[in-house]
Image 1: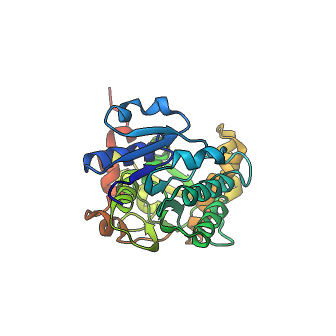
Image 2: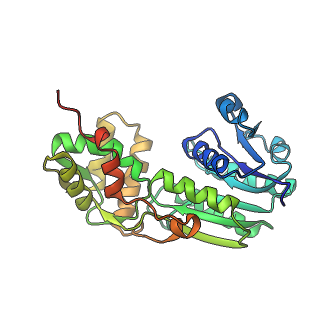
Length: 297
């Protein structure tokens, strides 16, 4: 497999670009990157990455886009505009992987995508995992927990108002940084063949919203209290603040899952794969303190 390439799909997204950077820094190669917009990856092409156009709606073109690849990172797509579209895209990609001779697939999934999960998009991941299991492919399923990076969107308002409002109750989450997810994905892609495995990618510990509010209080010097509200009230509030109803419903479904304990998973997977422990929520927020607290004039 030494002459076969490592593939990153969805490579123009945040996670894909970071995985490419990590692979290049490690001297891993050859590398193929696929995207619907090859022009967005010009800087990687200049560094020796072979950039190919791939549209997951065009299954006939996928096998050609995946030619010469041994191990592939399938980053779950963002096609959430209609039910079933993303799952169909993933299934097309997996069929094309088999047709083009790919031997191992790393797939970015979701924590605990069980039947009956409150998370509205859990079915896409669960069925993609099942399609992988039914294929001839070896695989590493990376069940990424929620990104700690999302706190950079919610905490500035919480610090300003003194209230961190969500519908999570006392539920804890194994929040993980996007950087650690990228490091885990790069390591799983470039590491030794490992048959078939399913791994939970998380931060070093689970944290509750009350604990996050306490961290925000300490960093900002302002009292921030956690306020948990009913899911329907949170959904209405998000829509009132301008979020599309479908997006609000999806976000709230993650809160419901957290409240029910579905996301309370913390493992050593990041360290096991990369050799370095994942960053804690407290350390991540400390590193981004400037983004949380407005500078005083």
